[in-house]
Image (tube, rainbow, N blue to C red; front, side):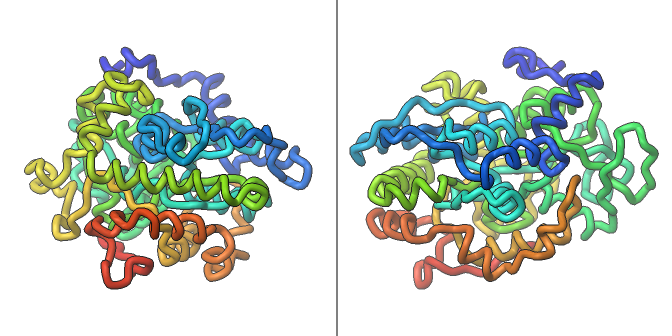
Length: 412
């Protein structure tokens, strides 16, 4: 077991009993979560307290930064809101279940999860803003002789969720490299051109890599930094170097709550936008704040979180190894830009129809990208907040002459 993983209690469980548990929790579209959501009347959100308190659920990843900074820096209070201490949740399926059950009214979700909820399970979730851009990577073992995506043939790779940007980007890269993504039992024989995918919760990934149960994993930070520092891993490629300034996690709220409390909702989004601007301008400080050496929102020590948020093109080894092939894109390892570009939503819908996932995926073929662009995202509140806090335009990814539009760039 890797040292830091042991310290944080992050252990890889290989027993059949634990795998069944993980499949129930993390096997979106494999039946478990689908059955849970189907039990809700009309797939609606459960009634939430009518006290206008902000209740946040989050995973221990840097994707949650905007929500956590808004709480830590008092931005909710500055808007006249009361916010409870954010609740850390270990996996994606548990946070979705808790969100639908009414435990949280503000969460960050993988963007493909949001449209899976809305269009497959008819849960009226709304994307309110992007939580961040970039912020993920593919980590492989240093001793595996894996130096490019083409070396992943015959290997086992973990993704955090089937409906994730990670799965989309990984499978795009595999196809571009002449490989075929498959979903098979871990002990099933693989062809030389097949890469087998499995779902693991992010905290399970570094210990699984250290235990040589997988050849690599693709996930959000700071689990890539942890893989580098404590699990014998190396960054094969940053996802933001494949899809330029891609979204990943998005800020989500229940549509009935938004419609019932528009003034309250605007204050929430004002705080989120302000937090993203602050995080983009103070990454090292924010990393310290979020770490266990600061306010303790994340269980990792400050050096791990700082690496995850700040170390990028200034590390020559990333350039020489090919982990970064597009330094001219001027990305950060993670960036914070709240505007939900419609072009990216359209790209995700189109890409998911080419992406292998477990479970019933028939709803994907029925999705009209133009309809999803208009229906999934509420642009009004975030646009109002961005007008109030115009410093977001200083982000190098934002086109100052037309800040609300962009062209998507994917290049392996």
